[in-house]
Length: 189
Image (cartoon, rainbow, N blue to C red):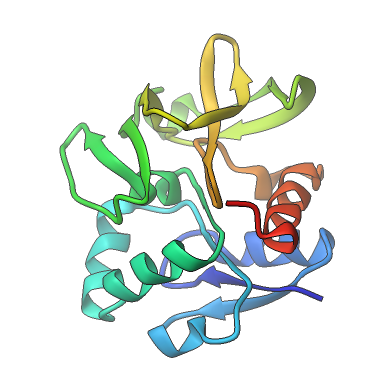
């Protein structure tokens, strides 16, 4: 059984841990660099990206996460996708720079504008939960669109790095977590 870490500093890490377990992984909460040892992959959950960045710096986790992402699969959802992007707008902020995308924070509105929509994951219909969702504004070379909602790319991948602007952990559908676990198991680059 693959061991998948879930960054547990802030955000809905518990729902991701449960979703990863439903998909067949042993989920481990990550709060320090030492917690990354022995993991096969890592999920960075949604939450508040500015707060998460502050906590990552306080816990000296920025560089360990960058190094982990160079070797092993990482999946960021919502705020996690913001942290993985190499360019962030509204406002500009620095993150891990692990994925060549430009992402705009809170692009679909405020908390009250949150919604459940039907999108396409690998061209198949799937429920998507959007909460103060960011929007992928630019996709860099070699970055593949894995899921869409309308005309928008809402999940992208390059190599072993995966980012979604929605919350698959809040759906009963485990396909997206299984997709990440397949990426972990196959070690695709």
